[in-house]
Length: 406
Image (tube, one colour):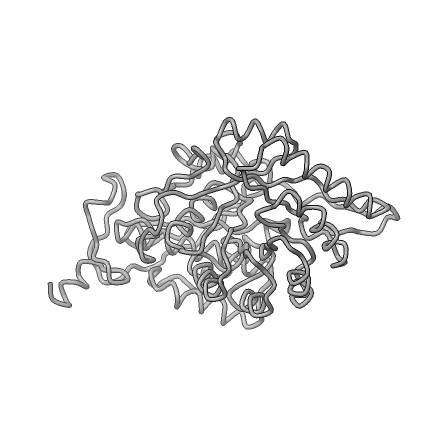
């Protein structure tokens, strides 16, 4: 095949278009050298909490879906997505690097929650278009699979729930949400946390990994150190968000002192902040959120930086079924991936957000899809039945009435 024929076939990232892989009902790529974005839409829906979705449409009938992080000011995220539309219409959606830089660079100031969530959702939708145009799963555009299934864990609130989840889904790891509070005295809270951790370990045995999450609620590193000390006997896979993430030097100092793995990163954005964290030596395991940190390719770059520091990646994944599927594609093609946070969608209103069945864990693992793009189509008719509602995470206060961290 000469160069002109190769371009006419609709290649992407060096991979020729494979028409046989496209579903018979899906719009077909016509073979034009370019696709053009015609619309960028944002949807805020409520399925127990708010979820923010992005749809990118093209002139050849191919569209893509992405999920942006929802943390409370969700209409602001949707408005930002719609504002980016004028920057993107008319451009080829497969030029993901160019379009990401357009959004990130021309915003001028480094973005926070809202801007980075909007960019992440749009970026994912661009990759969905690219995969569908090529007739390939997105991970095949990123070097292909380096594993055949994706290990995952679920949160458990009690020893009894942990036993039930292992029996039902065959998990090889669980995350204990045992509840860290601001009760007085703090030593009593730390001691109770350790006792509950020991009860969890006794209930599930020695051959299931346990993770623990402090939810970035601890401000003082010495409290986190005491917490890590009481967790040592249960040999956790990691302690997540042990202290607030703003001071990476403090996180690095804590990591040097404790004798259990430290995981963090769900509140950080882009490769730039993760580079600072990793250079400081602040984590054994990083937890970027693919709906917040900059999207699919940005998370791949973050993982590559981590790999050079011998650090593993366990993505933060508290959102909907599309976010889970995008993370599965990431895990499929990322060598230093270790485990994925998972919430069963088949038992939640979230299952109605997508057409067809959601992916369900089996023997502690998630299957890797083989459909073009992400492999999910969102259900816009269901969106109409799930209007957005005012939503934010529950507030928390210390015993003296001061606002706490959540």
